[in-house]
Image (tube, rainbow, N blue to C red; front, side, top):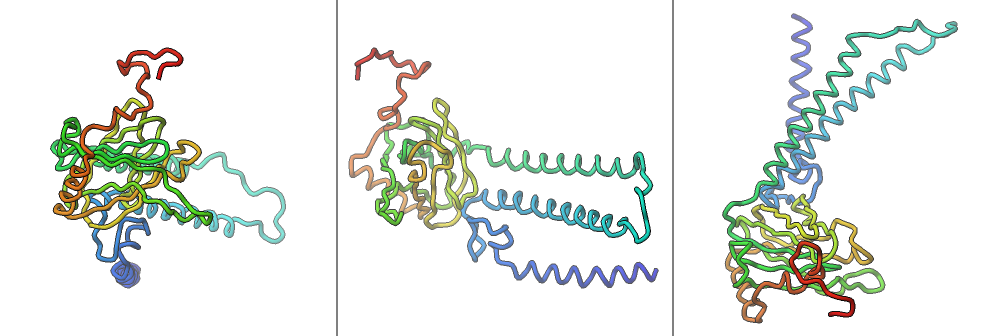
Length: 299
C-alpha cells in the first residue's frame, strides 16, 4: 500500500507539470515546429493538422523507444561491467526466451501501428472531393507554372481562365527580382487541383500545406483540400527537373470568395480564356496520345 501511495504522489506532480508545459506551448510548438500554423491556432488547410499529428506522434513514440533503448544500454554497461579482479569472459547464455520474445513482438507491434495510422491518414488525404467548389489545373513546365481555373468541373474547360508564369529571375545576390506565378484560392471552399506536366516529372509542393504530389507525364494527379486561412504561401517544385529546378517557384494567395471572383473576372477581361493545357504541351507526339507522327524536319 505504501508503495502504491508513493507512486501516486509521484505521478500526480509529473502529470501536472506535463499538462502545464503543454498548455504553455504555442500551436507551432505543439505541431512540431512545422510550417502551416500561426499563433491563433488556425491551420492552413483542413488536412494540415492531420499531417502534423502523424508526424509529431510518430516522433514521440520513436523518442520513447529510443529513451528506453538508451537506458537499457547504459544499465547493462554499468551493472554488468568488469569488476576489479575479474578475469576472463562472463558467463555466456545461449538464449533468453522472454527477452527474445520481447525484442520480436514489440518492434512488430510498432511497425503494424505505424503502418495502420499512416494508411488511415493517407486514405483520407488521398480522397478527392466528389463535387468541389473550385477545380484548378496546375501545370508544371521547365521551369515555371501555369494555372487554369476551370470552375467547379475539371473536365469542362470551355469557360476556363488562365495565367501563364515564367521562371524566377534573381540578381547577383540570389534575391528574386521577377514576379512569381501565383495560384489564387478561395478560403473555406472545397478545392481540387488537377496536376499536369508539360514535359518532365515535377512535384507540386505548397510548403505550409504540408503535402506534395508528383506531376507525371501522361498521367494526371489530383489533390483535394479546403484552405482555412487567408494569406500568402510559398510553393515550389520538389522534384529535380533540370538545370533551373531551384527557380521553379510560385506563390499561393488564399483570399475571400469576393476577391477570388474579382480575380477571375480580371483574367476574363484580359482575354485569358479557354483551355491552354494541350496547346502548349511539349509532348504532343508521345505514343498513345493519338497525335499524328511527325517526320524529321516537320514543325
